Image 1 (cartoon, helix red, strand yellow):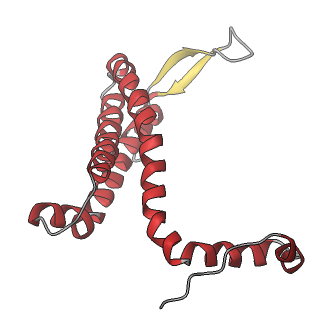
Image 2 (spheres, rainbow, N blue to C red; image 1 turned 120 degrees about the horizontal axis):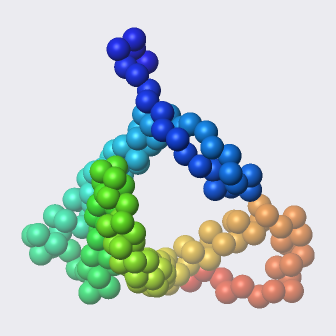
Length: 166
């Protein structure tokens, strides 16, 4: 903090277990925190958007990618969530808390849609790996590391073998 910067204080009332305590809170420190989250939300969104041009945006634009409708719904919901996240943090940084709370209900609804969409995309992405036996190899490798008695267990539990190429 330089000499010409002053931290003003305002009276605040504690709402914690020791109610009735009146003190001061630095206003400058309180106003920096929403700015941090607003900037971080922008940085996160830029990183996410820049992560998808080769795998999603360019193939969609050129028509070279074969995407199921679920991919598009999933991407729409998840990019909408990032947009909402940036918007919400900007509202708080500008002090529009009431508007932030109103829009927060939309965020709850969007999150409710994102959970099954993420699950379905994970299941759909695992199908080719399961068919090739790759997912089974990973599961066995993890079992070997986690369970010291994996060899004994594998005698009693029959796991299908990886399909061999013909």
